[in-house]
Image (tube, rainbow, N blue to C red; front, side):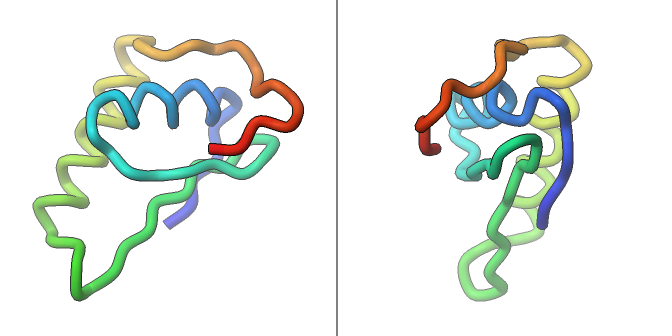
Length: 71
């Protein structure tokens, strides 16, 4: 599942600190891997809830990604 957000890098960093495994692609794509054998509905709901809470509260660094940084 992929989502676009202008502060994708900061969001991925904030979500990683909360235990959500995801990555991003420059310039603004958040990517979440969903595998039917390993990812439950609860896992997806938890990730979406944490993403919503993080964006609503602004609990992420809005600075752009440094060139050459890989997440």
